[in-house]
Image (cartoon, rainbow, N blue to C red; front, side, top):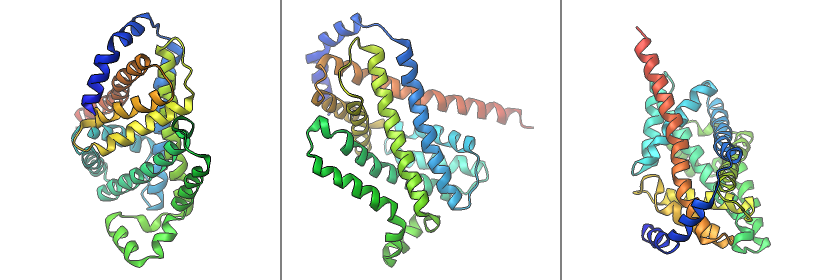
Length: 290
């Protein structure tokens, strides 16, 4: 995939550079592209807090937000999910919260997020990839399965016992909590896709691609990056997936190249800068504590 991206740069790079030089930054759209991901984060952390409350863990929203923001740094290392769980456990232990439970709940939410992400991708990529409307019934069926997942698992004793051992606190999850997990993770995917759309409007003079295509492009790129386990933050894999979806949406190759390149820098900054600020504040608080 990295080789494909490099070939794309060689082929479309001159046209992309010319388009970049002719572009003008629209600051309102750029501000929206930075704000929208944090709205998605806010929904995601709300879902995580709801899951923990079912397990009788009462942590403040801001506390969980700090853990979530810092744990995002883990994805920039190979096998990023393992590093994310380690960061969650470490910060939970420092705050006198059950580290195993927080790490397990974060992993469980991530698994739900992948499932919901696939549903979002399937729904938004339909018009781009020309998927027949009848197959959208699978997305609806998937949501129903997720809502009744706790009840279904309890009906199969062996699976229930295995999951309870692996995911602490699963027994306390209710259907209402599962619904909260579904809509909050879906909102996170959608707001990140809207942010990508805003980024395109901020950089390109005309954008004719619908917002649904940008949601599909972002979701496809992130999910593909998760599969590239050895690649830090899915570098290469994410760019190629985003490029394929946006080209299928009939965006020009030069404009796609601009979005793919800038989106990597933009997403990295949104991950790294808030986490660095949290760590800086945490360090200063530690130094002031006698």
